[in-house]
Image 1 (tube, rainbow, N blue to C red):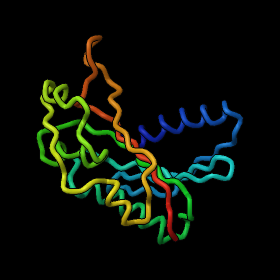
Image 2 (cartoon, rainbow, N blue to C red):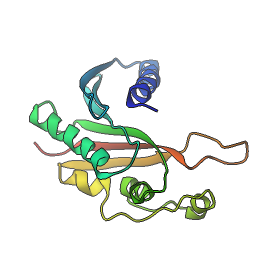
Image 3 (cartoon, helix red, strand yellow):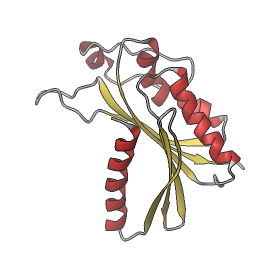
Length: 176
């Protein structure tokens, strides 16, 4: 799914949930890198700010990962990222046979899947990466609050399609 469609769908759902809880919610586009299809939005819920980054992970190679860091550096340089602001990253990916794709689960979560045999059964051979998203964002003064992978598609009524997944992470900016 393109970052544009993913962000629109997520914003609609998030806004409905937030407003149903009786809070005000404002979502604005901060930047759009057309070359890399990277979107950065600002979400303001009452007085809490969450920066939302939507990178395109057609592949899981270094360039795709670098776009996340570049977006955070841009927020820091622009002096809009404030102490205790939250930063969310949401993207999707189809597993392929490249090494970078096989390492993505570990890179994102910092661990292998609990039932790696299910992945292997579906032809997915997860590998351990040299680093993780958490470790790399710690270098940017971000502390991890949540890193998750979701598999929203079902191949049939019997099992979840593991080759497609959504990556979600939430960090807090801890240093100016």
